[in-house]
Length: 204
Image (cartoon, rainbow, N blue to C red; front, side, top):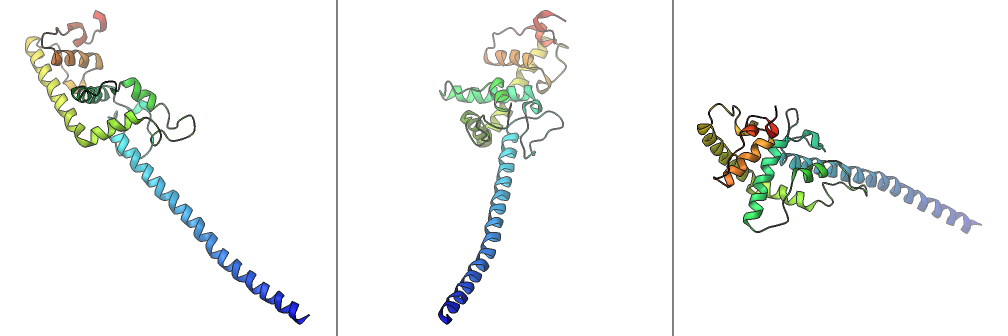
């Protein structure tokens, strides 16, 4: 009987020790998970700031936004020129078939998540990631050079057609920018006056 009591006492002490350790381990484990979630949240915020910085924003939206922002916030003419500069860079290096269009950006930003629930910023869309890498590895400078070339093309056009275009290149519509790009790439190209006047297909 005494032996049984001793075993019971020993078992009770053992259980108390196990429960004591568990009471310490469980909060530690929970806190560790909380910290991991907090770190991942901060990393995701930085990833979105990085992504948003590569996409020009309309007024009211800024590159420093550390969360998903849809296509509605994109400055389309600005994005068009960034992609034009990027695609030109790809072409010069023989990277055919890797070009991006506004439609690609719109599709990518149409949702924050893939169909399987994974974040698009972390899964798939390698072409978007390649564009971002290019942008932050000197592409922003290529974009400024591209704008400068368009400014020069526009200045030359204004000399021949005074008063037709009042805005600078950065404030033109996509159709007008397309005309300048064609002229930049082919000096013999005749810029369509109706487009530069803001009349699509010659209509008011």
